[in-house]
Length: 116
Image 1 (cartoon, helix red, strand yellow):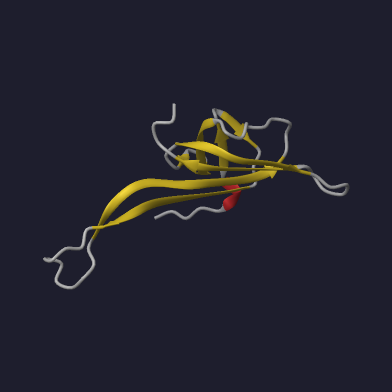
Image 2: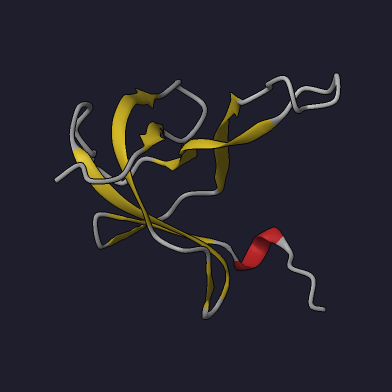
């Protein structure tokens, strides 16, 4: 089983490679309780709605996804090793700069299906 270092990572937003230096993706599943008289005194659950979130940040290169837009995001671990692409609703875009540092951008979004 291979292991990966962050130096081989990549981020593609809406088909454009962004020079990000961090990304995080969280896959989440709602739990639906289906406890009943036959559960033997134990709670019972089934998988519910799937979703999650994506956060990425890095140096600002002059291009900015629009908050409220629906975009496709691909997170890469190494050359040719990508997680499955997901659609997100962009919920936050922050561009930040200070006198002595590089300008940065942070993009956050919620994973959702059938968005467009």
